[in-house]
Amino acid sequence: MTATTSGGKLSTRQLILIPAAFTLAVTLVRLVGELRHWSASWFTTDMGPSIVAIVWLAPVFGAYFALRLARRGDGPRSTWRSLLFPLLGAAIVMRQGTIASALHLTSTPTFYQRLVYVWAVLAVAALVSLPGWPALFKTMAAYAYAARVPVAIIMFFAMRGNWGTHYGLAPSDLPSGISFASKYLWIAFLPQLVFWVGFTVLAGMLFGSIAAAVARLVRRAPRMEAQSFPAK
Image (cartoon, rainbow, N blue to C red; front, top):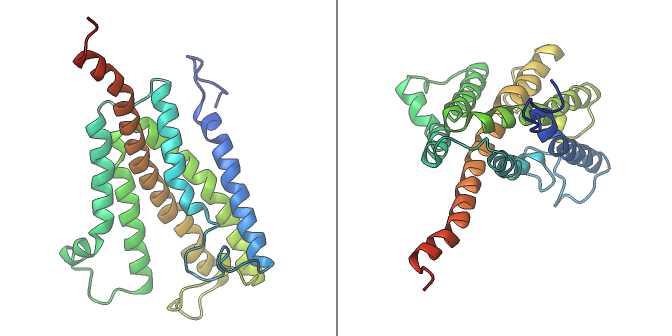
């Protein structure tokens, strides 16, 4: 990939470089904080939410990417279209229980079936948002992998070395007797590169589209006011 596009615009790699570096820094800070048992109010070592976490960055950088793309002329074809498709994706996530019932998947699924279903829901929901703003989708997907691949690598060593951080935790219903390779694949590698990538893309698409729509309204307000009160 070249540094810039033929029109002199920043490439996707350049656009995500600083956000990806910042995200990696947050990941490393959280890892150090958990290893050194810093304040539990900021660094949790269980499955609960943590204040210091990269999950909160998805909507923030989604808005950042959207505004940058719109400014350089890579905005969505339609404001309503850019909002509609991410909202549809979000609706799929929120109604995953109803979808499972409609597909007759509610009768005591196995541990693996449940994981695959949840991953599929997030992946489909993220893909549904694609037609709304393809340029933002491409950028968010690149950022999502840049953010989550390092986490997947850290989880390998955390699980292997029993570091006592949330990066090495396993669900309570994890089947017993599975190999380390299978355990890592099912609760670390695939969740990071499917579930969390899907979440990051969808959250970024939703909040990015909202930010771009608000920015357009703000820009249009002075023009609308000028048209309403023409100079005498």
